[in-house]
Length: 352
Image (cartoon, rainbow, N blue to C red):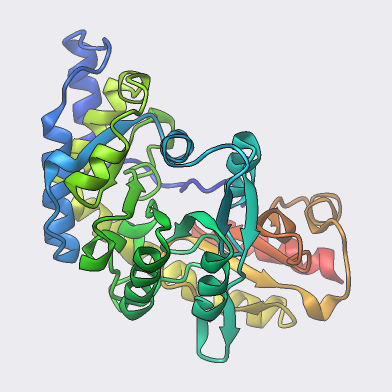
């Protein structure tokens, strides 16, 4: 229950694309691919009402490589990069690889839920932040940032000349009771904003290695024109055309999967209340990852090893998402009911 992959089969439309490509022997390097920009643009318009220019879409091998290479173009080693913890664990690894100074303005949490600390973000921007690495929806808490928050971020970015890179890989997995706003749909974000996404999480095809970088405007695109050609060329041809198939033809599969995940997120709540009532869990608005608060069970510097040793179940320790979250864990609920129930039983056993 650790890695962010689903236990479900992939869409038949994606399978057909892969099989057809293999049968035709078309497994070479990825050349120009305008179909990808068209597919991303069509999906964004139909899903979120975002009218994005397909010419502003650039292929990349995955979200991590895309983020690293965009930051390399926009900033210099030693520059300050802002994140909001709890944040995707690889944000820390990428910035370490880039030798950037990480500045953390943690998310605020209240009885109403999570929100960005806009006062803290502005204070950080004033101090000389070069890049704001935004996660929307927020991994690991499954929070979808509100449109007014994103507009405020964009206005601050323009005021202080900060580039915002929005990781939106979990966006297609937003539940129907929540409205997702792409960062670049905010008009104020166009000059300083970039979005990086992929079909990998939503359609369960992470191993096919393809993502996209979306620039907010031609000016923003020109700013990253110095990206290495290898960012495009190293992208998998199978992955790129699988993403096209996903966004053009497999939206029904996505909706069916979201229905299943919607059941699982509430089923997990029932299981925790029944089997491990001391665990605090706020139902996520997007994605299939649960952020579990174990504070009532006391301190433990390594919950991962504890659950593996005592319960034979693996989940991600909270400190991977920020050093201050050692009393939290992240659990993947994108599985079958019987497996989810067994996992929670093992967690409960390990907590006794």
